[in-house]
Length: 408
Image (cartoon, rainbow, N blue to C red; front, side, top):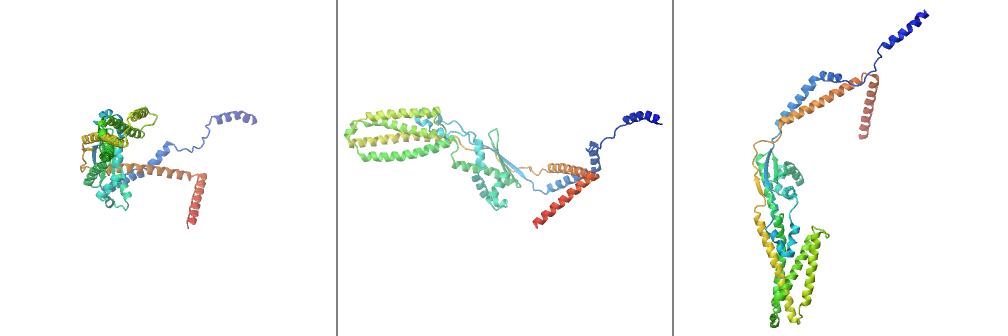
């Protein structure tokens, strides 16, 4: 018996070795399990999204259609003016318009003008948008208006205004009104290079004119002396007065250059050198001027002041007239390419898109729901998972109970 037992033990061991070992329980969900869950809930996953899509489609029919009217226009263009070619001939006055040169990106600036509070308030008052949008505050009307109107600038240089509203006629009127209000705003602002130069030289011209009138009256009040007339002061004094006027213009040029150049810039240093040279020339001219008696000297100084302001007036008058000519050459500052007309087709709601997105979203939500429900059911079958779920349930109930006590 013992011999048979000893002989059979290796065979038993070998047979046991040949038998497959029991596999450990796999907790992971296989692809077949997921497919089985989908098949078990196929009716819910198909009919649920279809019902939600049909419901969304029906609701979209009750939404008032929105129409979008579009207008496109060409903003004022920065162009090379006729006065720019003459600036070099005016010496020190050549840099006066330097600070009023063109804008780097004018289209973005005009888009900002259209979106400004000034334009929006004008449109709110013009169309009584607070009543139309049924809002109490003007700021709310601005936000609603900004949401209904889209303003963009394209690479083609055109600015596009898209106005959306449930009333197709009002949408077109609002888009065209934006262009009209922009014209009104530009009429009060100096935007283009010619407009900026015209405003600048108009102010300088008025100041020079007032001083010229005062200098002329002072010259007449000083009287005319025959001894002074014999020296022909016009030849000597007029040159000195023009030199002083040129120095004054150069100083104005330097003041304007500080707005857009640093003091280390080559152009700024050159302007400073020219001013220093002209001041030295003025000092030599004043030193060489003959001394006159008090009465004659008073007349000569008043005559010098008169010629000084006369020269400034002539220089500013030339630039002012050239700026006006350039401004008139620009014509209409805004050139409308496409006038907004009442659109024939609505832009929203897009019923098919709403139904499709609702169907997809509902299908995804239901699929997630059935997977979570199946996972909870599987977890409740094992004692360990059931105990964890029970603990989670008790903790949640306790948390809700504590919150309810604290709130009470």
